[in-house]
Length: 194
Image (cartoon, rainbow, N blue to C red):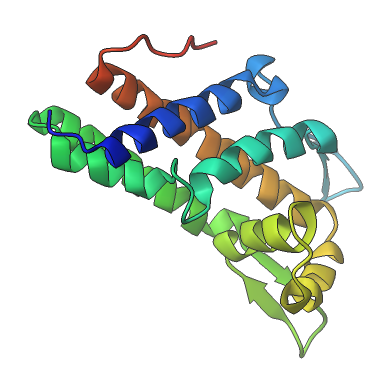
């Protein structure tokens, strides 16, 4: 192992961030978004979505932001790069590459796209754009250049919130999966799984 001091700091920072993700009440209590349906009017089905509690999700998002935001020591892709460079085992390299792809797939998932506005002025927001507008336009910053998009997204109500929360849960899962690889690489115990 030829880790630089900065690489080791990044891996340690990632482990701390992953621990925060694991200990967030949503993860620790196995909370999830639930969808229920029941017959509605003839030819229709009524669908009910129960989202995660807003404050609990913000707490999880605070931990996720440490691995999501570029420039943070625990940045997910940076940690993947360190592991891929330092690990000799092909199966471990393959696992890191798979997790990296899954993390990116969560941000590109078409199910998380939000179509907002009224015809003919419809705007399509990718899953990643939806997540970032929530992070940087509502939850942790109120970037002025995001406010028009935020207003459009908020007009979509539960679909907007569902997209943000579903993406956050996917990113949390990949963070915990990558932390297992980091723990094994450093010879440290893995975080307990539920």
